[in-house]
Picture 1 (cartoon, rainbow, N blue to C red):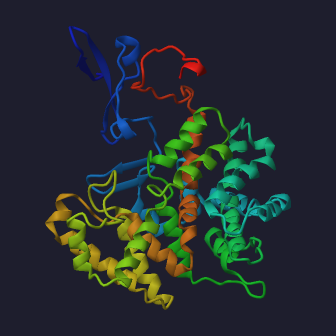
Picture 2 (picture 1 turned 30 degrees about the vertical axis):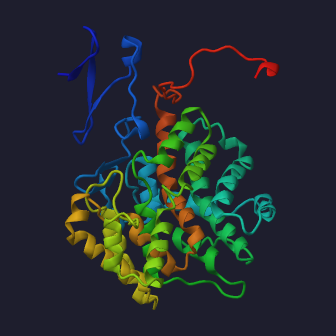
Picture 3 (picture 1 turned 180 degrees about the vertical axis):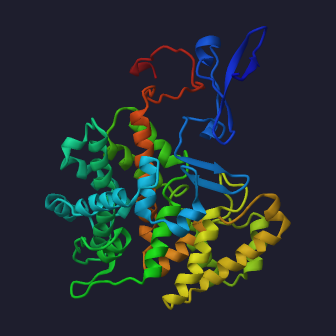
Length: 427
């Protein structure tokens, strides 16, 4: 039996709103006919209480600190899966068998190189330019060399487009980094896996190839997996909105890169390192800093989350990874010790507990990436590489939805009422 709720407006006007129940027992009111039936709309600044779609890709329970991709707990994926396997599962809905994974990995290997014309396009971008600017522009440029993929008509065509985008995004990222440091580009190697190839293209010298430690490769896999999707965040919602217009996969994901570039979204781990660096170089102890946070003299970066009201499960995984990788690399980062002390204080102090300020994924990701050798201006690019499978999956979900319509939010107008035009000589 279907459920409904009744909304009573001024006077005697009422409307029955169907209740939509998700597979994890989430409840929502369907207001799709509210305006046509009553003349009213809802207003929800920042969309904190608005469901923009129904999706079967990602589930978050912020109160309990749960994150699942297609039903799979993030802890299990981080421990047992690879980024390539997780990407396949996010895009296609199920974990691949051996043959499917081999085929998918083969496609990523095949499409890793860039067209030489695109490679030389890097020469027109200034070395001091931000890598995110290069990444977004080059993703659009890639589509210029593959016009046959702009109008996808089959699952096979989508698979090729998805493989090209997911594979080439790491090549673009590595090439853009090497340009900023004045190093010659290194081409991908067909016998390297996804993460090893990225590290090779980033750090190999002209006279020697970079050979990463297996634990470093595993840490990079985990970083990418943990960022691969996160429900209807700002950049994912952007990809879906742009895709709803019929825009192609490359243009939609380039828009996602631009949304991610914002410091309130993809740049949060940079802010964490800045905070830790200030504590380390300053004369303030960690305890004194936390007291300043409580008196609102300082901001505590990397704690709290728009969705999570509990410990971000991704933060726990990256914390353990950092503790394993840093000693193996011989890195004695004093910022990790400061981060641990901040975390311990926050988890024991009622001020932070009451406000549900638990460490989030950004708190440890910057420390881990810095240990691997990723420069700070590449942190958001790393986020974009990791998030690409989720963007692709959400774009495809919109593309395959027979009931999809172009997204068109409403507004409540608060400007001047009707007035007459005033000629220039009377102003």
